[in-house]
Length: 226
Image (tube, rainbow, N blue to C red; front, side, top):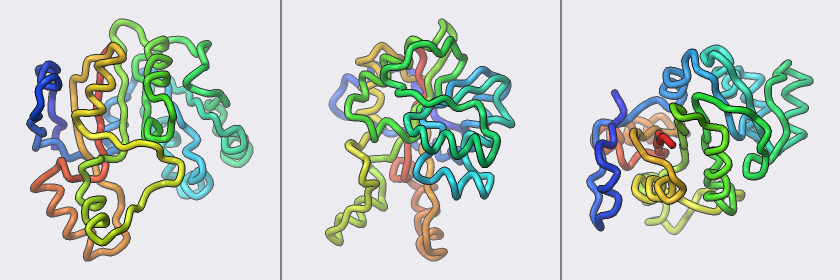
């Protein structure tokens, strides 16, 4: 199903926002199609602490991007994970650096900021860094967990919150778009996606719900231009 185009970013200045409905995608397939043949800077490329299991299974996003992007470079602050991927899987195109402070990386067609913005204390600093690696026709793709997810709301009903211990924020369609706008970006495209569900029964139920109401899915994607 195609992602939704954001035709008028001024809509984010109103109190009530209409959530796009036809926008549920497979996250990795969306990203691979988006970067095909382009120069890509991949932030958080090592995906620590999941890098070992994913690399062994061949499911690490960076491994997939290597097959799709025309030119690829990764950046990650976890030096141990970067070294492990290099030593055990010959992944040599990830450098150890802090994306919020690194400057000497050149220019790219696409900046991928995948599932890292919820980890950083100053997301605006991260986005400002991203802008220095973009030329006039570049775009940034941000993915993150969805503050409006049905799974999160259901857990809250039962008095629980399942969240990565390193996360410091949640974003929604409107709040992530507004953050991008405040930092000089123009949101142009939006999609939602689901993470794997542990049990088959729960997966079937949530798959139906996400198709009916995509904005309750687990994650969100926003594409923005500079």
